[in-house]
Length: 190
Image (cartoon, rainbow, N blue to C red):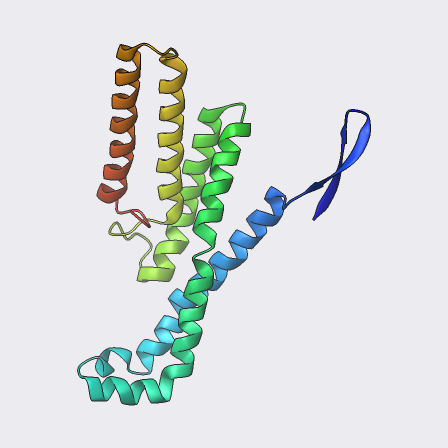
């Protein structure tokens, strides 16, 4: 994708992928992943996956009959792995370009809440499943960590040894808090 940019009175080509295209790629790869994780998994289970896992002979025979579907499942899950890093990149881009971090956090939280019910229904069959939260809660925690790190950097500007030690310590606390919250809240990707 190319766009034209006026720089120093001259039109120059700007190469790259827009954030809209990246979002569409992330949505499509996430959809492929979720179809594999929800629908194809259920088909594999219905075809006897759990029973086949009791011993090597049963598994080998099951793979002979279901290997192609299992291969499709694995391909869909591998394709789906592209979504998360794209969403992380877009999250950082959004943070850098937003004029109001609080509103950005609010929108992310709202979207995480709204998407939780369909996520829980798809993956657990229940409207509320507290043992596993959708990836947008993980992204929300990432956004909170980024915002916290940014606040520390703004507040402790300077190169004195004391400020540097305090800044590094606070950054470590913020990062560890985000990691622990991900584990405690049982978010996707922890």
